[in-house]
Amino acid sequence: MKRLLAGLLLFIVLAWAAPAPAQWIFAKKQKVNPSQRVPELILIVKTDPDERKRTHAAEELRDYDSATFTEIVPVLVDVLQQDKKMNVRLEALNSLAKIRPVSAQAGQAIEKAASEDESWRVRLQAKTSLPKYHLAGYLSRKNEQGPPQKRTTQEPPLAAPQAPQPLPIETFPRRMPPGEAAPLPTTEPPLEGPPLVP
Image (cartoon, rainbow, N blue to C red; front, side):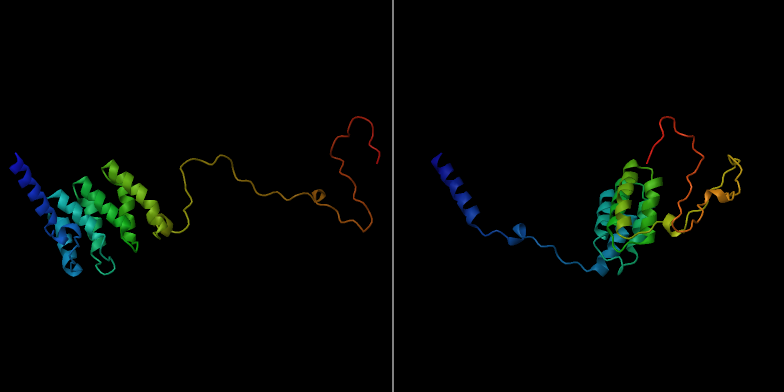
């Protein structure tokens, strides 16, 4: 028993004192070449049969510059509209909402997802992301069309429009010479009671 305890103690001391590889504790991500990684991610997000890999690829695509890699936004829009799995569409939506600068194509895809996606979670996330996307500078299709059109209905109007009637001359105040007081209007009925004396 003493030997077992001494062996265990010796093993713990040696394991504790042995140098540990620094990469386990202070692990740094290896730098990847974006011009190589972006096409890989696009291929994964469009063709990989594994849902988790497509989800991670859609998430990672938001980390790259969409101005440099112009194919990122169209691919994420296509994934948002065409992918069968809800989680992949949801991650593509999140990536589109976080990519800057804002683009009309991404904004229109978010609007369409907010109104037409089959999953209520994707619709709710799109409705939540849309105001933030508007604050970031996106102008929706409704705002780009100009002033709103006058609505027409098949119903008859409630009343015929009337031409404006000119006001009678008596309603306008008469210009009085200086020092003369204007007469009080007599259209009100006289007050009952004792007369008021100034």
